[in-house]
Image (cartoon, rainbow, N blue to C red; front, side, top):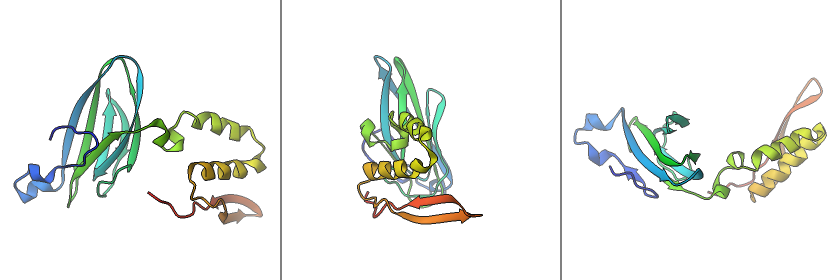
Length: 173
């Protein structure tokens, strides 16, 4: 199939025999010409397993059995000036077989992949320990408006709180 952006590609029609439609892999290759260094955030979806390389560096490696959904995975392509080689491998178990890729805004990446994450993490690490949960809860509310910010689970070992889970509320896709 032709590499298409923003469209769910389906691979089953490429094969005539039923046995060719199971337990196989397809590779898609695309060259991206960049006039200068650039960051290109992308949203990905796959049915089933997904591996993505840019210029020989593996960015995504998901061994999953799932249907294609937008925003199943994300990557931030760091393009170099000139030709960039994007290679995608989608492996199939049974059932449907497909792939999706689309450029997105940097702000649509999960927070841990955004440029502001590392400075925020350093800032939280420098806080007194008793302020960590408060900072994480505030960030969850900021990045997920459905978060209620309530501690839903607390694990205590030998009188010490070792784990707290903060509620996300109802998640909307």
